[in-house]
Image 1 (tube, helix red, strand yellow):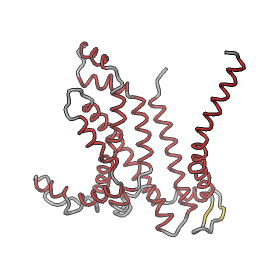
Image 2: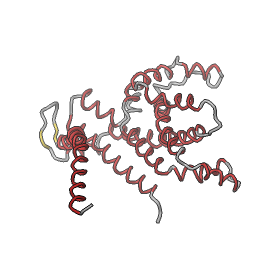
Image 3: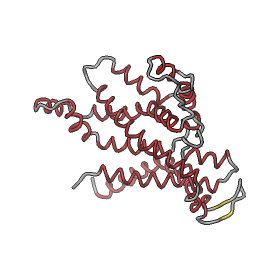
Image 4: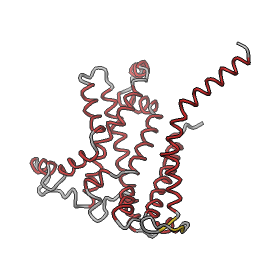
Length: 296
């Protein structure tokens, strides 16, 4: 093939490729980048409702003196630090168990564990609210087995309310991460584990010295997506505790909602609060990439 024909063919392929991607690019610009830019512009304005006036960085300065924001930020980080590691480790452990070729009924177990991911956020939150009520199933069960003598105030005690939220999130999203790990495990050559067995490596050593290192890219991906999801946590808190008691479970996303629609509408300040999530996602993702990076 001559150089001219090859060049013409490459241009044709490039044109076809751009035709396939142009719609996606337009939609991403319209529904992702444009709203992000608009939100940043609005964050530089203050006022109620649609009567916004440019005030520069005043909304960002206000964050440092906003006790409710600080409380929401602290709550969100508690969920992040406690729930994400538990969920990632649990998903890894379950996926390793369900990857066993000798296990019977693997399809049933995988479906059962993944099923919470496709349930309605509102529906499952309401169910958990019922389960953790003072006269709910959780308290009845614990009292039946004599683990407690009086009902735990799951939804009205600041500490127990956070525990209830963490349990709910873990129940819903563990199966989602498990699917990624299962896919990764099935791409690991079985001969690697057979060689480890011949060398006398126990199942525990195989898990920590073979499984986890080989799943490192997937673990990084699920950690980042779980971090982003936790920083944007809204539905569970809104439907189970409504942010109570006394803002003890309020998250940043719920605070943004309250600023926009529950309190006197302040879209400028709400946009500034929303950009703190963007900054935290960028910083935490960069840290996770750095920690997971290969040492050369």
